[in-house]
Length: 323
Image 1 (cartoon, rainbow, N blue to C red):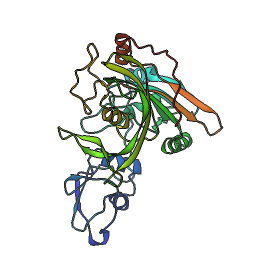
Image 2 (image 1 turned 180 degrees about the vertical axis):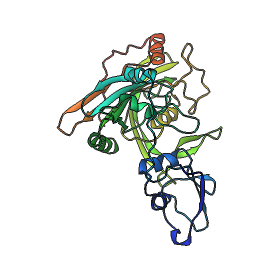
Image 3 (image 1 turned 90 degrees about the vertical axis):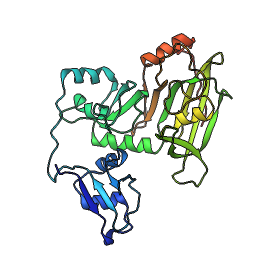
Image 4 (image 1 turned 120 degrees about the vertical axis):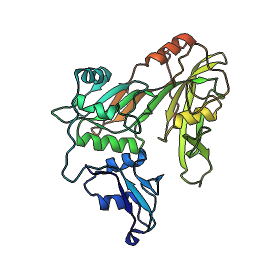
């Protein structure tokens, strides 16, 4: 394993994208690892966080974190019986191609700064014939619900394509602080990364053409309401932007209960646990053979408790809106 390196960009590399420059310097590092280094802020330009698409100027300094040497293999993490039992208890579906987990709230999907315990690191506990499954999408740390992992390279390829092509129907359940008006509708517009009140990164609504702007679209409906205090909201994201559902509920003036980033001055609904009330309820995945796989995750404990306190019936029939 190498130490931290600080590399001066040569004149011949002027104008290169950071990710392509990195690949030329360290061809043995897989692309997924590079993305993780960028996402976690370990790969920096002149001390600042960077994106793979950022263009380099001659003379800039690129900070490169410790990397494995060519041919050096990372020793497999030994899974304890507790780790194996913990992961197996999450499994809600398994076939020859994939495993579906009901991810608990509070457990990160991937590692990052000060995050050492996460789904990605625990996947060896579900290894089949010595090969651990691999991630094909993500959920926020504080979001519970359906998370799919691929059991082999072939299924990882078609699942990855399905998620990127928006061919998977995703349904999320949430509880809002306040009642959205109108109670059924569509939210769409452009979003980009911005700074929150406390300096933490959040997503914000921006105009088309703004730097980093991406289109985001969500269908939503409220099957039940608890006076003016709270509502059960069913959300169907038609795009997959970071914090999309959390931001869209916030833009309605009724952020998800317990959301630490997208907040309101409205009093928190009494009796609810102060945790994000957002659950990835179901996924409908088109299989290459023409069939569909429907995956559904039971509510997390704090969501179920909130439903009971607010008088929401989770067995209510819901007709999904047409995109």
